[in-house]
Image (tube, rainbow, N blue to C red; front, side):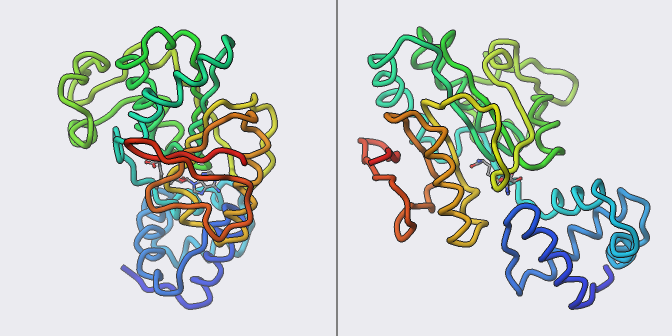
Amino acid sequence: MNEISDSDFDFVCSLVNKAAAIAIDSDMKYLVESRLTALSRKTDYACATELLAGLRRAASPELEERVVDAMTTNETSFFRDSHPFVTLCENVLPEIARSHSDTINIWCAACSTGQEPYTIAMSILEHCPQLASRVRIKATDISKEVITKAEQGRYSRLEVNRGLPVQLLPKYFEQKGLHWEVNSALRSMVSFEQLNLIERWDGLPMMDVIFLRNVLIYFVPSVKTQVLLSTSKVLKPNGFLFLGLSETTLNLNTDYDRVNTDHSHYYKIA
Ligand SMILES: C[S@@+](CC[C@H](N)C(=O)[O-])C[C@H]1O[C@@H](n2cnc3c(N)ncnc32)[C@H](O)[C@@H]1O
C-alpha cells in the first residue's frame, strides 16, 4: 500500500469534514490510506495517491461522494445493545399508543446497512404486533452504498450470526443461496432514503421516535449540538430519542432530558 502525503491526508480530512461533518483524527492516516486504496481498486486508479490526484485535477461530485462513503464507519449489527429495543416495546410504544391513534412514525437516522431498522420492525412484530400496522419506519444514511444494501435486505451468514436470535432467522428471513433476505413483513414496515444529517431535512413527517445511535461520536461538539437541535424540530413534543450507549447530551447545549427505564434510557424534550 502506497503512503499518501500529508497534504493528501489534509485534503481528504477537509473534504470529509465539509461533506459529512465527520472529524478524522490526525493519527488516522493509515485508515484513510487503506480505505482509499480499496476504493482506488474499484475505480480503476492505480493507488490512493492517483485517485486523489485525479480528484484534485478535476472536481467530480460522484468520486467525492465515493471518497466520503469510503470514510464512513458502517459498523452495525442486529439487536445492537439489545436494551433500547426492549424499552421501545415495553415503555415507549405503549405510551405513544395511549396518547394517539394515528400512524406511529419512527426514524432510524444513520441506519447503515439496515440491521437497526429491521431490528425495530422485528421487535415490534414480536412484542407489540397489534401496533405493527400503524408503524412506519423511515431509515436514512448519508452513504448511498449502505442504503442500497439496506434496501436489498440481503445478509450473509456472518451478518445474521451477529446478534440475530436464532429463532427469528427462519421467521423473518428467506434463504437465497448463501444469503438470507428479509421477508415481506419486515420490508413493508421500513422505507429507506439517503439523507445527510448536516444538511436540510425536507419532507420528513413529525416523528414519534428517533433512533440516532452511534453517529454523533463522529462529530465535533458544535455539530452534535446542531444535529440534536435539528432532531428536536422533527420530534413531536412528547417524542422519544434514543442515542448510542456511549453517547450523551451532557455538556451539549440542548433541550433534551435523559429518562431512565428498567432496561435502558431515552431522551425527551424538556
Ligand atoms: C457506526 S454506524 C451506526 C449504525 C447504526 N445506527 C447502529 O448503531 O448500529 C454510523 C453510520 O452513520 C453514517 N453517517 C456518518 N455521517 C453521517 C451524516 N453526516 N449523515 C448521515 N449519516 C451519517 C455512516 O454512513 C454510518 O452508516
